[in-house]
Image (cartoon, rainbow, N blue to C red; front, side, top):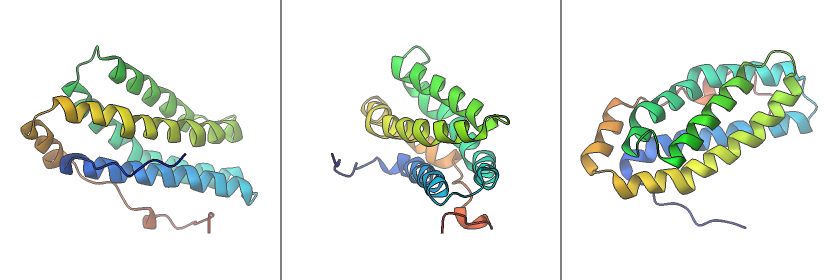
Length: 153
C-alpha cells in the first residue's frame, strides 16, 4: 500500500530529510545482504552512519521535539524506547548479521512511525515559535557522499 507524500511543517523538514537518509541506510543494508557483501563492511558503514548522523538526530528529537508532547506522552515513550533499542543494535559487536537485520527492519518501522504518527501529533500541538527553535538549533547531518566504500552500488 503506497502512502501519499506527507506535507511536513517547514521547521520539521530537515528532520524528515534525515529520516529519508535513514530509510536509505535500510535499503543499503538490504542491498548489501542481497549482494552478499561482507557483513563487516556493512557494519562499518552503519557504525559511521550512527556516529555521524543518527545519534545526533536522536538527541535532537529527544531534547527538542519530544518535550513538545511531554515525557509521559505514550508516543514519546514509544519513540524513546525505540531509540534505545536501535542504539543497542548499532553498538552490537558479536551478532553482526542479526544486528544488521534488526537495524534494517526496526529503523524503517521507527522512521515510518515518527513520520506518520509522532511528527503529525507534534504539528498539532506545537506553536510556530516552538517549531522555529528546532530549525535554529538543528544542523543537518553529514551527507552519505562522505563515505568511501559504497558497497551498495
